[in-house]
Amino acid sequence: MHSSIENFEMPNDEQVHLAAESFRLMADPTRIKVLWALLQGESSVACLAELAGAAPAAVSQHLAKLRLAGLVKGRREGTFVYYSAADDHVKGLLDQALFHADHLDRDLADQSRANAGNP
Image (cartoon, rainbow, N blue to C red; front, side, top):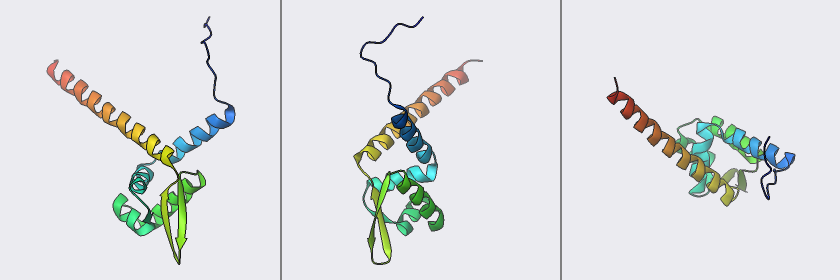
């Protein structure tokens, strides 16, 4: 039997759903690159495509999905749209995800070296 945890409060279903949807929409290498670039400042689709190493049409589709999720916002200037990260929460999410990935890389490299030394 589990004992109760003091002051524990489960997030409500809507919060959990929105968080899961944000993670789902960020779960793509191109989208992570695009978001990372947008954290450096506002940018156009063409520039983001070049930075992410992807076709402009693909980046445009990724941006549309990220915009629907509230992760990016767009500003129209004439015929161009310039995108930026929606808020500082996006930076926090990416920083934590990449920090975690960096530690996973190190742990896997350490395990690989340790296993190489063992017959």
